[in-house]
Length: 100
Image (tube, one colour):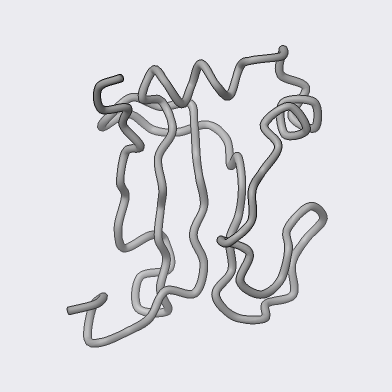
């Protein structure tokens, strides 16, 4: 059915670290669904269909090697989807590791 009133996503982020229901402290990666003038480190246009090197992001964020992997497998990363109708984020979803 889509977002509020048929609106479409204009950007989304992976945030963390944050457990379910907790406030997040950082943006790990930003995705745009339209050409939006980005700020440093953000890519305009759709960039969801690429692989991200977690070692490079760890280094850019000044995290220790393996930090993002720990956040990921501990369920401490989430996706926040924004639209024009709800700029603060219309959908928040925790990224969970299910089974092995």
